[in-house]
Length: 532
Image 1 (tube, rainbow, N blue to C red):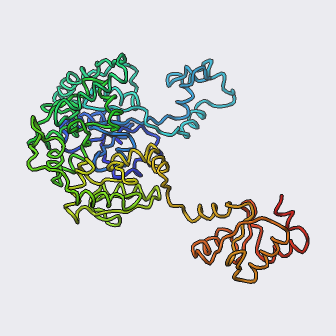
Image 2 (spheres, rainbow, N blue to C red; image 1 turned 90 degrees about the vertical axis):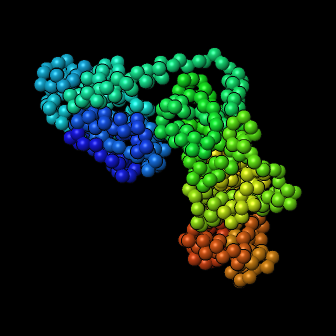
Image 3 (cartoon, rainbow, N blue to C red; image 1 turned 180 degrees about the vertical axis):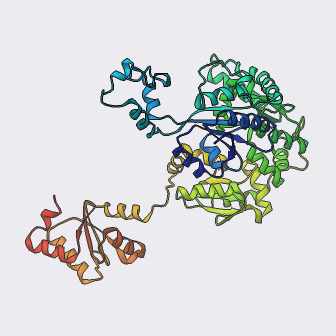
């Protein structure tokens, strides 16, 4: 601590800070973002003014696992952690015995202290309580370049700020020089409009969707962003603007900070939770990551040519024609070549782009068997499938011949549980683990015999004896030939901790092997055992 700002190297390092017992403030930043650089100066001065707290920087794009954990979609972004001692917690409890107690009361006799056993020294209680720290949790966040709000929020978790009003520039401490104070004033002016924007609740969902549809189609290429193209208010929006300008694409824009109804509504309308969002002819192309990846691979210009270059803006379409019947038939055969089919860059074992790798990872996590096609090896398929599916980027995931979406859609569907549901509705379930498969087999019948061969054709004397004993007692049973499946044969030995066959199960529980079954049969207890 002591005023130094440190860089977080990993999520595990951040997790370990929970043991420190001190307040923590995180600054998510990006090297290309001017607002991040300004706020970093303020952040450093605050670290000097509040030496009891830990101040850390997190480079948002370098640590996606941390950014994702705290829903960071724009920079600068701040997260505040409060670590309270047990004593602090007791004092904060309404109607509690220490409700009105604070540091000024220490050493004084008060009604509250009298409630504590008279033989217990208060100083001892205080020290004891400070040994037990409540778990640190993110208690507040701040998005955007607002030094005044940042100072106020830091004061609440790390200092003694009690005012609910925005902190004045002076509250940044004596360390803040005139340049920083001027930055505070300018940013306060720039963000005051955003903070005072009303939220309309009068528009019906149907009317809002109509409005959103018109907005997305108001220009052939339409960007929903934070700020304007001339003054982007977040680095991700700025990146997309710069890319579109570099590609010489004419586009319209909408500042989602100016209308909270559009800002929140468009997330649901497009099923896309973050900004910016880029549309072509009313169809969502993607967010900053997808636009950047398509720009770097040279696919962005093609995508906008195919989807939006029909005059009046965007890129001219050039010689964009339909698919030949031969190519269409080939593509149709490919998308239906496996119940789940992934068109990707590279192979599942060696993905050649992060987005393809992410979808492979998700499918493996869900234990879904899938086919794949490397679009880098066949440019005819690569270009033709964009037209066939009306989807301009890769990877593309198909289920039973129908396009499900790209990496971001698949990721969101997995997080919400919708992916498993959609696959299940289409009759596709994840591959069972061996343990799950064994449990399913064992419980497939009330009485289940794992044997060599079948009841009608046993392939060992022990299995034959058990089959005869069961039939003599007129017991109905299911069976599984372990000679037909080596995985089951070896797996069930470990699962049941029983090394030989046959194995007889009743209601999912192992009864035993041949010797035990013969003993039960001889004693007349077999039928009773399998009927309990």
